[in-house]
Image (cartoon, rainbow, N blue to C red; front, side, top):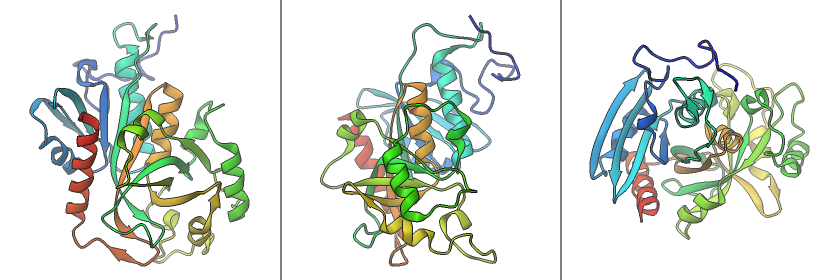
Length: 290
């Protein structure tokens, strides 16, 4: 049995895991990810009971119950690199014995639901709507650091790369599907779905120009115009693909819910983004705990 060294699995003096400051008892079967630490309480304000709360850096966690269902809500901060930290650490909390530093014989599969904000790429997906990511398209390269055999969608990837004439010096785009179980629970005729693209940054990686020129000025237009087997790229954000990829590799189920607060196609922004986020929170919690 392999023992994981202290430099690889870092614990705090109280036995909690390094970045999240959590112990195994703090991870419920269903874990909700939000980016903004202030959004954690916006979610848990709906709970019937709060049992635990902590924060270290941008990682705020509240554990509680809603309609008899125990939920853990964690703020991940922004970006794929933060998701790499959060997902690996919550998996370690449920699937590694922290005392013996060895992987458990019986593994736990978590349900992971992202509630995030995003920008739509099409005029017919308006601000204040909700998009469920059927697939995550990653431009970030994080998943290429892991042995990822069998979790990608090569046909979709190759079609996208050919369509965009994607630059070979960049990380190869990867595509991973969501959890069909969670999609069935959360999808309805009120929700848009498609491919959610995940960028490795907010400005240049999403086609925004301030003072720096872009490597490909037309990339956003190519992304918007991509279609394959009735699928299109619906929205652009910074977390979904890594959540999907690491969840599949680690044996968890994941789905991403996105409140659309900007429309990149018609350059509009929600007049009340907080209301849009609150609508997504209420919808998702109702479907999860029904």
